[in-house]
Length: 124
Image (cartoon, rainbow, N blue to C red; front, side):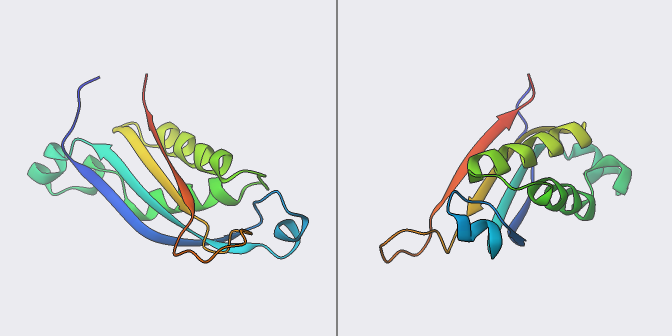
């Protein structure tokens, strides 16, 4: 697969969901923050100035939000995988996607700025 040096990104997408292994996480939920980086060749969009030549930010955010909240996952790794799969399925020009999930209220007995995961998925 050819590598692109072009990216679309969304940073700090706040989504309230009920993911986690602890029982209270499934009842109360928490607000997660997602960062998305889509690998996409933007040459056509830069030349045409047409929305049809790129992936709409609005539709990307909608797909990510829907996939992340569609069901309760025990692991944010699984929720991130669902988001990556949804983006690669719905947006043919996207050749790869990095999904980072920040879980600022992770049930960890420590003081921390951030806890989360980041996955990278590419088309086969």
